[in-house]
Length: 230
Image (cartoon, rainbow, N blue to C red; front, side):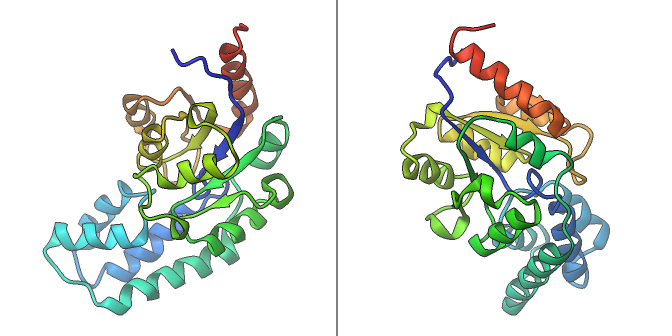
């Protein structure tokens, strides 16, 4: 068991701070429905949350053997960003949970920085995050590569093994685990399928929570275990 002390909490954004994945999926599904069978698209997209829009497009092209119009990518991404910026709701209890945890907090996301900043504002967590935002456009490779998590740790001067991550997606969990960090899997967002906890557990997450009310006690338990407490 990894018993290294925890010095930094890093949260994913979409699906952890704000309930945005379901909005983004809706935009992409509507935009791509003219290019592939809608039911098959929906099944495919339901398993792709956590990926960048560009990676989702590549997956759709590969799966259906099609070439999507180049302008469609930027158009749908802009639509999704606008919808999220104006309509997204915070994950219930996330502000209270994060403000009760006595650890520095960073956000590491596969979205672009301006989108993450908007979501942090929607969640009323600007002061808590204190500008510690790391996004896909700041690194060479997005999740599932570990780059964005390693950048967060390096920038804040914390060893990866001393970081604890909150993630909802398999893509993000793989990234954090590849960075050498412990992961709490969150299964409480609207887009999460019933069996997703099993998927995250199989990847090797340290703990699972279904509601943000569980987060402070889970973090405290992991910190106590790391320091030799019960």
